Image (cartoon, rainbow, N blue to C red; front, side):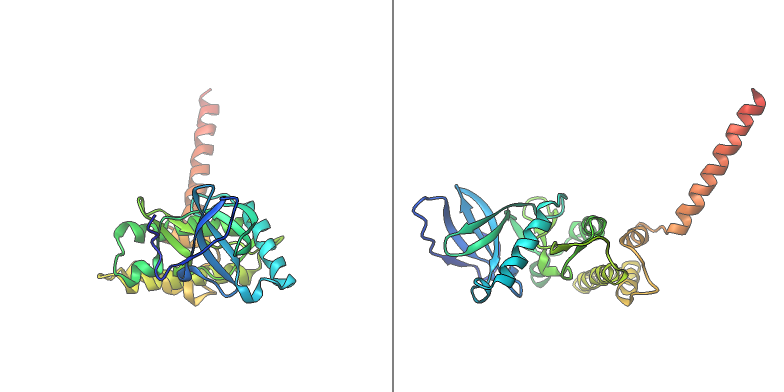
Length: 255
């Protein structure tokens, strides 16, 4: 398989059992404390997320990795890469095992000027759906960025590769606001790389980045993208209730 990550590095893996093979480091997707790899497990491609060597023997960082696994293992969303297991991998150490992602990061697509209308639409729909799901499950995470957004090779479906770090009882207003700001930054950067201007989306992106008193929830952003607002929906619901009440009253009088 020719993997679609830049600067990948093949690594020799010593596994007499034959369970693990063809380990490849993916520098494009590394994080502050973690390296990301692709590898074959029993012949099937998967991805690994493991501590960098300088943190691997530190109990504090090992606990942090296990906490992320516990959080992400319970997440199930079409636009979030699935976590499958937590294993000790030869040459890597303890690692979170996820589905493999055949595709390109949003960062790479922007750098290579390969954005398409479908990808822009996915940013407006699938990314917000994933972020809404994360917030509904009270997940605290690092800001979403073009490096953590992947588009699959064949269908251009959006996948978040690293999202969950801790699950809390409820998200603070600050946590929710930071999510909205990170979405605004991503959307603004996408718009910067398009050959045409989209003023309505630019206005939404700017309002997301500005924070309070902008959008309060991801749902507010979704409604703005869909050219609606919560006030309009409230009016629609009230009007519908009034009409149904009038209809019911008419039926009672007529009966």
